[in-house]
Image 1 (spheres, rainbow, N blue to C red):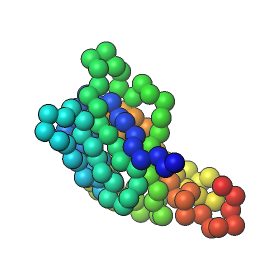
Image 2: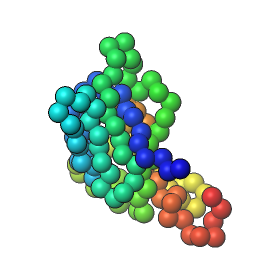
Image 3: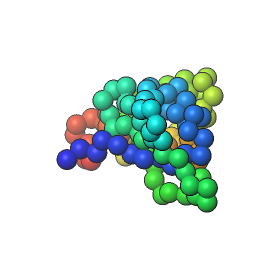
Image 4: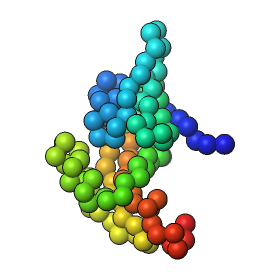
Length: 123
């Protein structure tokens, strides 16, 4: 059974939708009278559903990290910086690289080349 949707509780729905559209190629869709904004993946990956955060909910309080597969982490981070998204240090892991940042709701996000490791590397 594939994972198809992840919910983010957002205080600023428009800002959060624009962030994922601009930096990660999602398209925002919303039905009339629906409080959920669904961000549809441009490449067939899982969709993100933006749900209005409760008044008392702290931003970034969930322990989750969204990981986006990119083949060249350095190139992606340089392009993201040109578009206003700063990632932290690029880390070298076991046969792949990754870098971390935060979305407008202070959720952890990461770009990783793990999915592009050579087939002989262990998962």
